[in-house]
Image 1: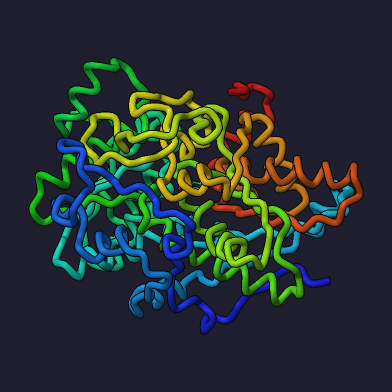
Image 2: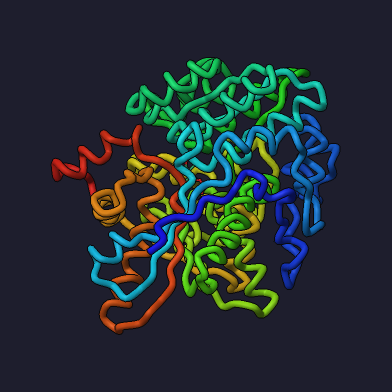
Length: 434
Ligand SMILES: *Cc1c(COP(=O)(O)O)cnc(C)c1O
């Protein structure tokens, strides 16, 4: 019985997949926050390099991965695809469960798939400094390392709540050479205004984005870098699903009946699922893609589909997305990477068109699933990934009742080695069930 498929380095995809080429209807464009007209590349050039702006607006199906990026990808890619034999046994389910594990990246999550090309395209255009926000610290760590690869400096605004509760992430970022500040900070106008408006706030991704964007706009050699949400980020993450398709084939498995991914800004879900949606759209498969959100930030399942800002201070373009409102501050759940008010426009569009579905999961159910997974599959998943596992466990248990031989694929977006205090909170029985 095969347990995992590890592809050779030579099989790292040569191109990213852009779902825009295959969508039945074009996704609504981002708008200028002042004029409310569709954005032009010039509008974005203050904060992004042209290489990424071109990808943001591209409708080409395949975009070549530059060789220097593929060279760095070889450090951890292709990531493994596992058959969860022990989890299936623990659940007594007739379902065949597979999971694609992105926690093997040196920073512990899928985020490095996008930070490396983002730093690369910025370096090509002569930018020497990148600014960003980070929630759980995963994106900040990924960008810190990517900047180091290309000789750039990196400033990270880390959501204050996670800055306080996740000191190891800050140490990781600093080890890779980044400067890290808790957000909202005294370092930016937006930060000072937010501190006045929300005294003692634990911060949010929306607030930290405002600070990082402001810092990039004010620095002629600086660019802003976003770890999720935007089209070019979902594009870079498509490498996950492309590899998974090849790996399922090596297992001799059919295309999955169901695919579960956790969704904060939507990048890992888009990354693993869009290549499978391509199969659906071509009539070759009928995989049910399920976005698993935290109940504390349920943008798809409880938000509105409308134009909204990506940040709290209203500095970013307007994006058509499922949103809880740019002012929304989610409860301080452990899955910091999922505490975002909006959802990637491409994921939102796919949801609106009925191409994917969504569920929300409270954090105790998520960690219950994470612990079952850790005790059977050995890997301790990231707090965020636990939401996808919880969704898959619901399906596997249904299969146990009906006796169906379902094929289930889970995107396990990261490792939980630095999330152990969250597991301790769950095990002690003190976890708030929001
Ligand atoms: C950041 C992060 C997420 C959430 O971001 P998405 O853009 O929705 O993928 C999920 N899992 C992990 C491990 C993360 O670091």
